[in-house]
Image 1 (cartoon, rainbow, N blue to C red):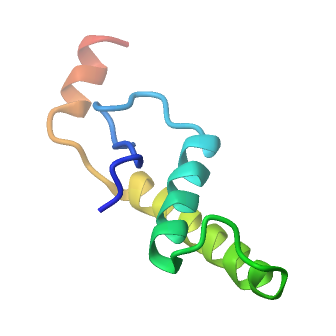
Image 2 (image 1 turned 180 degrees about the horizontal axis):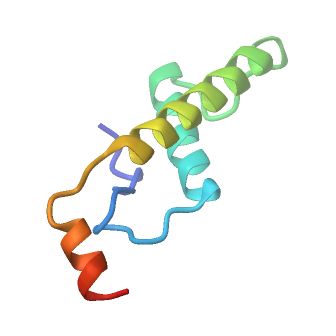
Length: 77
C-alpha cells in the first residue's frame, strides 16, 4: 500500500516509539484520504483519524504474539 510505512512489529523493529506509531498512522491517513495536509475545514476529522489509527496500531502491536519471542527473551534477559 504505502511503502514509506515501515514494519513496526518485533523482531523486525525491537524498539517501537509513539513517534513511529504516529508517523505510520499519519502516512496511512494521508494515503487513504488523498491529502498530504487537509484544508482547515477537514483538519479536525483528519487529526481524529490519525489518532484513531495510532490507537488501533498500538492495540495491535500490544496484542501480537510473536512466535519464539518468549524463548528469545528468556535466553537474552
